[in-house]
Length: 131
Image (cartoon, rainbow, N blue to C red; front, side):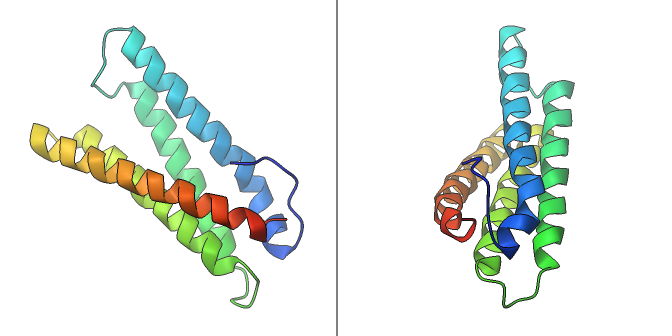
């Protein structure tokens, strides 16, 4: 994600959430690394769950903000698709933490990764609308 200063209606609406989402991803990564260092690799720590919950809440807040824009705003649909894909990835990730069936948890984690990969592609394309 680029932290460049966005211009335009979509950019102004998305700007307050852009940095927050980046920081949320860093918080989750730091929590994951701390969990692995503590010997809990493969298990979701309370810190990881909290970071993921915050990231998802901020994603949903950004979605609501963008949904509130008029449909004619250039890039609105691209931003919605990008944020919905991120929300889906985070939902799958959360489910992978709470599923007790190992095979189901692995499949859910794989779905999270696929959605996260798709999110990164969409986010790169979204950049043109945020300038």
